Length: 444
Image (tube, rainbow, N blue to C red; front, side, top):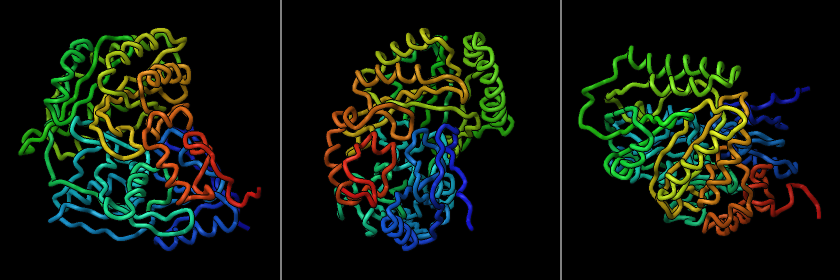
């Protein structure tokens, strides 16, 4: 007799669940059969990616769909700069595929371990004042609905589903195939430099508008930030020496930083000093490289995270409040705060729907206390009109989120039609979208 399926855990280790069964479909037909079988048995079913969400969005007590083996074929149209790939492909594999064909995504976040479906479904983004989240690059997608129907949608076909499913939380169907708009492969010039926080904020408008991509990291208990700008250049003429890349991105940013976090967790009084040393240890550097290799860097130090998208104009207010929160906590913060920027878009549940955004991401080392810190900042961010990242920790519910998203009711209408029995629901979706229907197999 088969035993109990092994428990699933996300990357950070803060979310765990045990499914009824683990399914690894190879075709769209396999996904359809799995969905229909779950419905017939009265079980929920949930697709999982690589586990880089910090929320319970991928958890299920029903069937778990792992899409790594899903093979819907790959199509690369270099003339039209379009690529169609299985939704379970990782961003890392996608980036390598595109590079082989002289193409690239216009923007990326800072890690590439997520699956395409997972990154899109939670609104994953990079930074760039004229660029939206990764879901804005989608031109078409195919999904299997809760009724077992296979739908292909785009701006011209099933437009309401397209508007909902590009950032859909897995609530309206299982993504099986995605078509993305790409650009010609390009080289980035990265410039990283330390700066005083006040000076960085003062020059922020010109920084954000004057560079293709801008972000900065604030080190708690200091007035220091590390500013990073990425700009397109015609040639990869200043590659980072291998030893420097290893020193900065592997040894200092991972090995040494992990040790510092463990020390700060064990002896909290040392945390402000560690933060000050970290701020001073990062020196100025300039280098060029293939776009995705500049955007994405290794992240081996485990942490938990909350991130809020805010109207850009309120960023200074949010950071002032955050500094006071950090100073008043009964424990110490061990991770820097990351600030990024995106352009407005028209995707119903995108954090950037209808407005240019500044993103503030706060982190804490695994095993260190975080909830009072995160809850305090969430209160500030909510009052400032913030929208929480769907894949990162937050405590908002449907009643709180609905006013933040003008098309929230439209999303729920599409969900009601495509998953009327809430086959894809779980506790997280029940909280952020509302329950609104009986579980599969329930009787009235």
